Amino acid sequence: MSFGDILSTVGSGFVWFMTRYVGAVLVFYFFSLFDDYAGFAARVLVAYMGLAFCSWYGVLVSIALRLAGGDHWQSAQYYTGRSYTYVMRFFADFMFVVEDPKNILGTTRPAILVGNHQTAIDVLMLGTMFPKYCSITAKRSLRSYPILGWFMGLSGAIFIDRTNRQDARAAMSSAANAIQKLRQSVFLFPEGTRSGAQEPILLPFKKGAFHLAVQAGAPVVPVVIANYSHLYSTSKFRFLPGRIPIKILDPIPTAGLTTEDVTALTERVQELMLKELVDLTERARAEPRFEVKSGVRTAVPVEASPSTDKAVSSGADASL
View 1 (cartoon, rainbow, N blue to C red):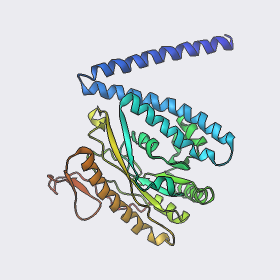
View 2: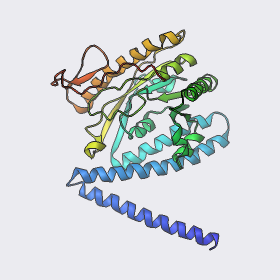
View 3: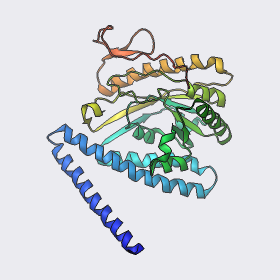
View 4: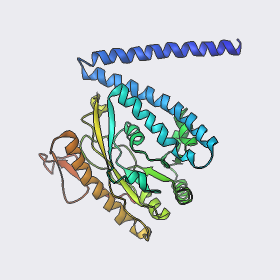
């Protein structure tokens, strides 16, 4: 078989796949007029296919920006992320909306941005709020993922082996050096994993992000995303159109802080984020249902009993 025949076969297979994929999306969208489960299926298909196409776009953008020279490559994640927001806005009518009246994202560089992590759809949240000259940290296994892993590697993502404490510390040290040298911001999820929470809660914060901030001498910028389980929840097969607010809080300086200050810094940021998370979620749902209990780091429905609520307290984890 000649190379031309191979290309023809691959092209035909791709067209066959895409025709049926798009057809399935259209069918599900039609039935979503009568059933929310069909809407869930349609938007999930759009989200996965959109992520695949935007990852390919990201690979090309990363290569182009690398070839352009200078520090342009540091904005590859910004441009790629924005492309995904357009896909989801147009085809799923689902989007995050950034509230940053002081233009903190545009004026604070470098910085350590930290945000609450709820579900896999947070990749769209990142695409919406990511400033230029910013990268993410990710678990090392993602490096081997086709397309997505290639894009992350080319765009400057920092991969960390979470099972290897020494590797994690080395990666953080390397990130601190890059932050100082390149003036590149970094985004981290201090919870370390998705909460999957149905209510506005925070999982225990790990201290790695705050050690990094102190080591780099960069301010911490809290990024708070309203709990959006009323719009998106895989456990309930729910994926509805809507708008989710993201609030950018004032930067917290770390100049002059040492390792001994990391615990207090972690707790301070967590308390600020929880309070804003509760307020933002109430506004997003137009329901004044939540309050902060026991002073700090726990939120429960107002009507819930303290003995039966399922809120997760968030004492800081001593590990990286």
